[in-house]
Length: 494
Image (tube, rainbow, N blue to C red; front, side):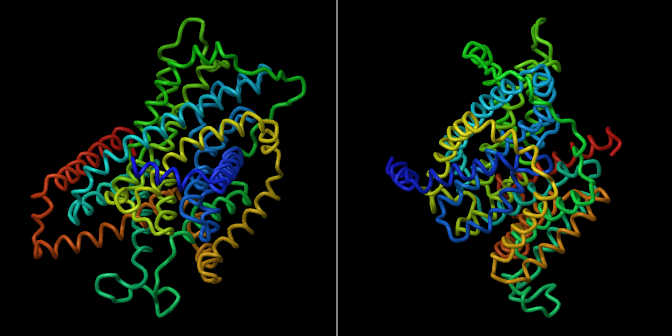
């Protein structure tokens, strides 16, 4: 109880509420613009949280994450182009409903469902994370190595059409993470005599390059999908909203979809898009004879939006409790935690309990602010889809360069960002996914250091990894996951 009171004391400030709203607004904008994403928004604005307090910085970044998931539905409904991956299923019924003359009703339904799913997800994060962390307190170096190994195996599940290309991307990330002074031996590795590389390659600069610059180059070259999507003519459209009776009838669908999203979100390597499609298919499977999915059915909007927002806060559960980022956004947020002196993992709730509780309670409040913003600023958000892409690209490049320079007040980080932007763009052109690069860079050092520490504890014996129950469990899970992925890849001809 004392911990909760301390957390509320850190949370309930005017500054925190302002930054929650700022982050949510930024997130909605990034989510509503096709080709952008919440992860891109977090990456771009992460350097600007250097001088902020820990709680307001984390709340702002989480607000960007939550807002972007709702924002993705705006372009999905209005221009038939999902702003985020999680909104891919929303357009199946959202755009047809908008074409029937009810765009605001479709947006209103997306907002209500997003808020509902987000609240369920945030409550799961608040109530379940501390319990999981108690179990994780027994982790030592062998358990952390096995856990990192399991996390690295997730690379196969986010590799797209080619698992081999995903593994190569992950290896690139792990190689980049080895640059600098080795923390164990004190030797320099892959610095090529450049003193600026002694401290390693900054992860934030890599993130800016991989996610922001690579996308901007693709947009400049006109290689991004969705650029030719048709836009609705807003003239003559009705300004009706979803009625209370309709919301009441959709509560079972939103409840089930939110739970599906929360469960899937807590599983590393999944994501909001998977949750959205599973929930949409479940709602369609149980459709009544008078419900016509694909033709503007409200359930077809409520189900995927509840699910993709249900997967938001819950994806932070493995990050906070085990130190394993469940997806690319969690990996980016992991950088934010590290930047503010927080070590994610089993001991986080002991070492920084009040800060984490303040953030988790703030995640619940952020959902309410998202609803209020969406409710009253919907006409403004609609205009976001009409921003000239050339102007937007130029402004974002300036912000990225400023953010990279702010990392260490050095142009070297800007060069790093640009180099990795070009590298990521070329890799994307040849089908190499960018997400494994981030996972490899985050989890590689964890696996390496804990492997060496474990072998030191066991005096060189590898039996230490099978003699400890938790460690053995993660090794078995890793083997099972690799076997299932290999069988699935063989079945699909990948």
